[in-house]
Length: 126
Image (cartoon, rainbow, N blue to C red):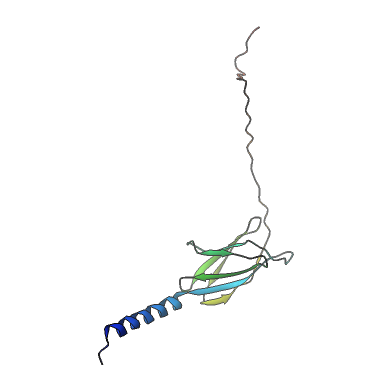
């Protein structure tokens, strides 16, 4: 049986689409505060080492479609909370995460300026 040019083209398209569909992974879940169990909106969820990612909605829910096959690591990060990493080992998985609060110590610098030139080392006699 000999395939026509059109049939070969359709066969190639079908095989390519199947490979693309198989290569995608879907990760969903909810992110909460570990101490209060309140949902956290705006938590960053990214694939470690890539720019693929998403964030949680107002209900703390997220859905992340990744264009690679497992295993891979996803990173949960949120200001004021400890960053958590989870390894994903299957194509379709639900991961609910509870983030723990973390104290952030800030260091500040004070910069002051004056319009009058001052020099402490040189004193003028009037």
